[in-house]
Length: 289
Ligand SMILES: NC(=O)c1ccc[n+]([C@@H]2O[C@H](COP(=O)([O-])OP(=O)(O)OC[C@H]3O[C@@H](n4cnc5c(N)ncnc54)[C@H](OP(=O)(O)O)[C@@H]3O)[C@@H](O)[C@H]2O)c1
Image (tube, rainbow, N blue to C red; front, side):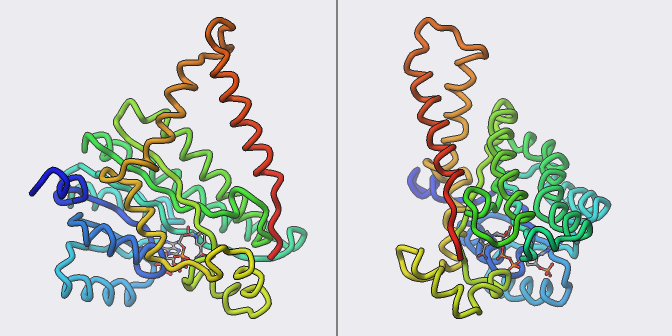
């Protein structure tokens, strides 16, 4: 294999993709498997899981799977124990893909809605990272990819709990990229716009919101899962662009120290101001759908 082919190969690498039976997770499993990775995936519905596994087997993909509800702490622990014995204690890629949504006005959300959405979208991914940390570290080159959303950056009116959880995922990715860089673990967050999956049916199946989504999308259409899985896959070791930025951010911010020294810090202050300006201006954006 040439060095160029090696750079774009995941042969010999292991991956866990949560929620790989439908939508974006399904496309990510196929993308990573197509590059040669050995994958484990999970979902709640056993029939769907077995159906996917037999189709992947026919295509020669190296994919195994477990029935697991990532909302359950004990099932998450069981999943990682199984993964550890399957992959000999080493994991290169963790894709925290599972996510769900309920769309209502904020005043109508119940405490149960809040717990369900936060545990599915945030707590499960947080705990999966904690559980997977020893395996990612042992691999010598670990990568975490979170499936966030544009809703985690700007107001989309898709539900405040989902949006808050996705905003927290973005911040979690930044923090882990800095905290675990010393363990050679990268962390990135991919934030898709509307993608044609069962989760987005609620919006894409509604003529009025589909029209607005199309008008707000430069391509004039929602995205396809394969267009996101490509981003997910370039965030893992073969890629060179996306996965670098959090560590780069870490480098200069880490160099800065706090409080920063006035001497030779001028350009760093300039960068910090630009960053804060971009952050504030994007967080002011609001997109009505
Ligand atoms: N589609 C979009 O427009 C869009 C946009 C921005 C961000 N995203 C994000 O992208 C990610 C994937 O979304 P998607 O649209 O592909 O979702 P989807 O079509 O609903 O598919 C979700 C997958 O996750 C599994 N799953 C759901 N809850 C689970 C749980 N508690 N435990 C284990 N597996 C579970 C589902 O299988 P089972 O039902 O069998 O468990 C399914 O395989 C999510 O984090 C979502 O927030 C999606």
